[in-house]
Length: 220
Image (cartoon, rainbow, N blue to C red; front, side):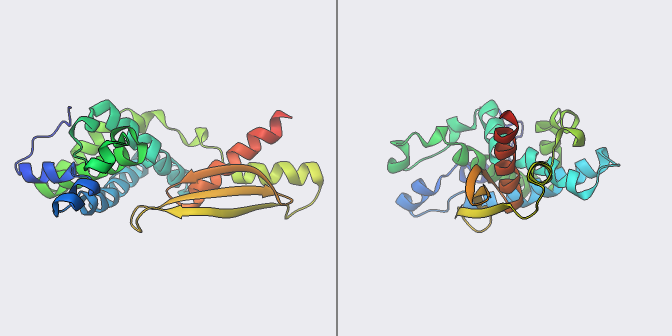
């Protein structure tokens, strides 16, 4: 495991890797509060960096780029690359279900680790760590690469069917804690489900659903 930061307070590091299942079994604090902290700091630092790098990008582009960088898939991949799964402390129940391989748990651990780094070293150390971990990603992601699939899907059916209002979105499920929810959305065309998507916000989930529907429609 290589996290790229040396903790002064080793207890903070341990807490960052303490899953709720172990915390409940041993009546100690889990990493959820640190996760909450890390989630907020990550969003702020990534937003600030994107604002500085992409000076001509509008709010929509910046929002999509930030969502792509801090989504569950992205953070779980970072956690895997750093070997964070090796350090997660699980309770008996979660240990049996291979929790160390779950994207949601890896993502939460990444955010908790960031929260611990902030608490241990302050905002400058936290920012330095984030910029190091994401150093290549800020240059690889471009506004032009981020298609607004909701607009594309609406436009496609308007041109094809010559009418409006046929595309709609429905929230299927909202799960997770209030500070770090996951949304599942279905997109329907004339009431028929054409695509589904998940994301850390309704907007992100709708975009993912619209992308699936658009790809399906244009393959015909």
